[in-house]
Image (cartoon, rainbow, N blue to C red):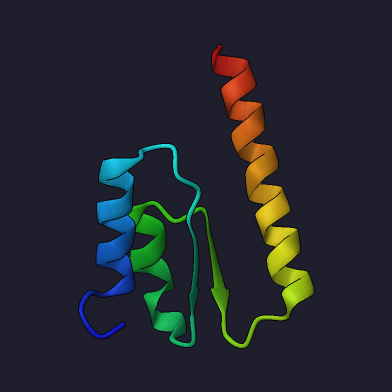
Length: 72
């Protein structure tokens, strides 16, 4: 991204919405560690098949639902 790195976007989004479920997608696998440290729930390396992305979204949402239910 031209104006802000993906890790910085992750950090800023989580400041705004701490329960956001971020799936970080990059062609640069070396960004994985930083993305996960910043709070991404998953890291996918490009190219990503749509089926894989949908599956990851479903998994992350299930985790979020389980966490929400157990803390209420």
